[in-house]
Image (cartoon, rainbow, N blue to C red; front, side):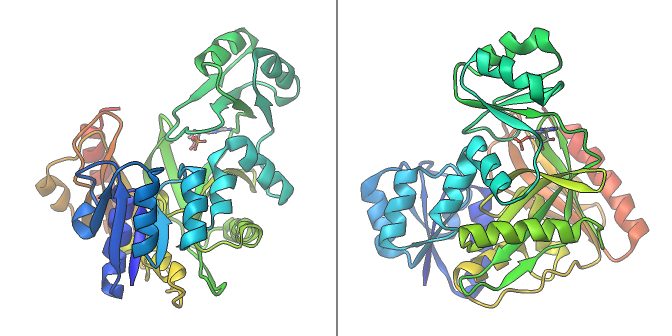
Length: 364
Ligand code: AMP
């Protein structure tokens, strides 16, 4: 069988690495000649809305998936008509626009920070009466890793904040003083089988994920799974989903969801019985899902901007390195490494070393 992937970056690369043992062939649509997943499949080089290429993809692939949520609506609907696309196109619609997404959460009874739409400065001024300070103004579309965001501390910053959005439709959200940022990675197969990973606790800096810890017996696990189940049911979901949450005084508020495999689930490659990538493939191929049980203690560290020398990373005990084969660039995720061990003290020692190394090469 052949799986098509929209996007050929590191997520597609890790999906393909997990799919090859299941005898999958891959066909990858990506504009770049040297994207990281290209060595693992055949390549259709061009834009995501190139109808000729989409037709070739639909002809050759038994099933199509994607590694990013900004798939053009036209491409998603074409593929839905001519082949199977998973996760389903309605998951893209719900996650591409922050306002649609927040309303979607609200309608499902999934709690969020207070929010309001902002199309002009007066909307922002009006909304701040009930949102309160501090707040965050975000572009509704195409924001990632904290891009397209402005933190508003008081009334004097309203005009500056709106100007920074350059007139694009936006959303303002109350700033959440969270105790933890966590995410739940979960999978649902074509047949409706579901699986939930132990929660990921995430540490961001400058809006970019730096470190993820796998949590054990977390008190918020049940509530997070209940939220993920609501998404599954509402979207008739197939594949892996990542739901990002803030924990505030024992309650979970949803920030956003990604209808795809996710950076905060990379620890599952070594740290869980079955990785998120393998379970994504099993889900979209309608195979039984694999166990999501954690294997000891594990955590993942991103390398941002540039990686450290391979020798330095791999000389840390219990460390596993995943290079994305991407040129170094400021703020770009170029690699991640995971520490996994059954011994808690050893795990913590190695993780401290790995974080120090990543910080040394971090250029952001
Ligand atoms: P996002 O692009 O929405 O995922 O935001 C990137 C990061 O900014 C999040 O992981 C949080 O660390 C922070 N952030 C976003 N929205 C809020 C909020 N309403 N309150 C507090 N922090 C936030």
